[in-house]
Picture (cartoon, rainbow, N blue to C red):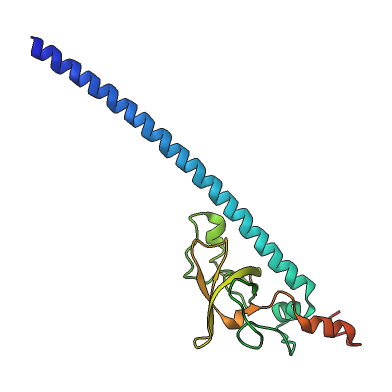
Length: 181
């Protein structure tokens, strides 16, 4: 009888311990989930800011605007590694003039509807995005860049990277040409 009572007590203690462990595990999981959701919200906000900054750079630049929306290439558009100096850790504009996705299709993004939407093609050129250069591969005409819009760095063609501020715009504004206005 004493053995049976002891076994029952041990099982009750184990059941209580299991309940406490499960509640504790759930609390830890819930805390990690809340931190992850806060992190994702911050990344989404940062990504939107860099998209807005990219779009502002296009709006400020008659030559970039003409390239993006009218497919008119102004001679002298500065592109790092193509016709201008390039610098690691500098910001550049990721800009397309064709209907493609904002981020290259193989880019690893966060599991969230907003980030996944950046991998989808639209009917118009996508929003422009400011990215940070990590490295340049001039032989293959590509650069590795980072952005809050992606989990990891990703590779883009140099032909899609532009200087944020285009010196040619200063020259055009000083001329009597009304091509851009």
